Image (cartoon, rainbow, N blue to C red; front, top):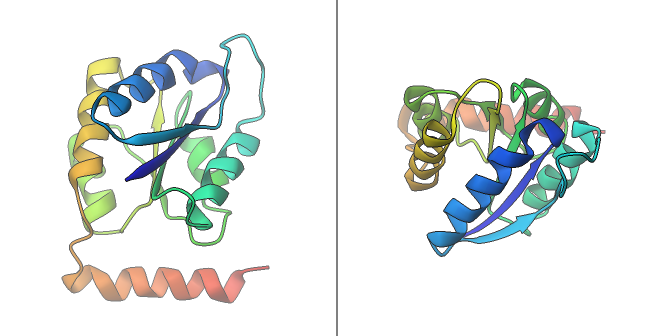
Length: 150
């Protein structure tokens, strides 16, 4: 498994913790920045880089973090093939993958703490798409993505 990760300056500390946590599990990670908590960045640029890498198949999944996770998710979902979800609890984290085949996890550093983030990332990486009744819904999302692709 290969994971792309990125954040803005508001989430630098949380990104670094998650990056180390995931690497300790033996998962390959590619860090798309930011690389300094004092470096001001436009989070849509980070979201685009991570999401494009996932969409192109260079990484299997992506993790994006900003202050709330909302801006990252909105930005990531602009990239064809991306299904990004903001998750701040175990239930939404699990359902994002099992029901929606989410390929980019978005979190807010101003919303959750380190231990919750580690728990959610671990849970998210262990979950698989369940298919079943959710498959037609995900297929419809994929078709919408194709239809509105520029």
